[in-house]
Image (cartoon, rainbow over all chains, first blue to last red; front, side):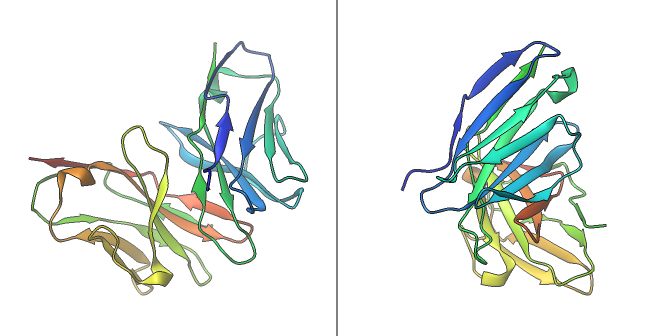
Length: 113
Length: 108
């Protein structure tokens, strides 16, 4: 079974730009969650999608948004980038339906300059 | 509010010595807790969960609801155990609340 795939692996963007990150979950998994990992704040939950619906959201500004497609693939968008958005963004997929183990991708390293 | 605390940022032990990683949580409901591990240049992966009560790679963790703790233990550390370890609390809607992580360094 292929693991969770995130693209791209690395991104460099300028302040004020927007960025879209992509996540392909494990086949058959319907839940996709996104996390931001920084040295200062650690791993923080951004949001979770299940069957194309956002079920849960963390404490991030509205500049952070996401969506999920019918094939369970998910995208995360950050608009009006700030220097503080530089981080490793992790995607995790889960089967859902009571199965709680999360399988993580390698992450996308975003650098805002 | 739900919170997970890992008081040690770094644990350095010699090979063959016991290692214990502390994890305390704050949660009003019935907790579901995990330990995740990240080896160098690898993705974050599940090490073990409290409901399965199993030993993985020699590691065990016991949920103590009275002390609100879920400490991870291994009696004899190996060099390949060097990694970053995260304790995590599962919340509804597939949300994981992570502790700050503990880096374990096993010296030869």
